[in-house]
Image (cartoon, rainbow, N blue to C red; front, side):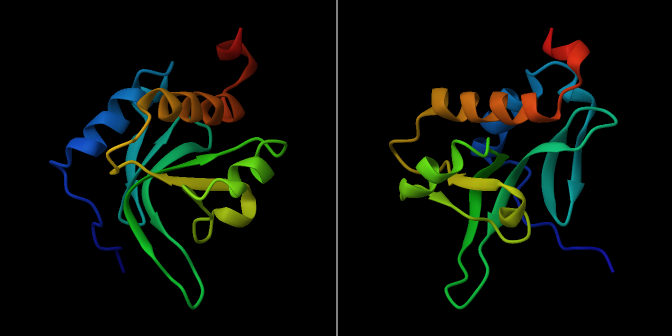
Length: 129
């Protein structure tokens, strides 16, 4: 059974995230829909970002306008102290965090840095050079 689409194709925030994600080397070849959401990856590699997510547990919250990235293990504790970040369902235990991008104070330079850092975790050495 296919997952329902959980995003609006005309979402201007998705367009902005897409623009940042697809500007990274070789990422443009791998935007795909999985589990009803846009995933961004390097061809032949694991994903480095997802648009939209939710949390698990009794306080389950949907975050339809969020960027979910894989953060470095040494940065994770500090990011979790920041109330803007959340632990996404399923990916959270693997080191991923989410950040809503629909607030008036969204720092798009920070979003670009998070996407870049997550991309670097997935990129092969030849791309990092």
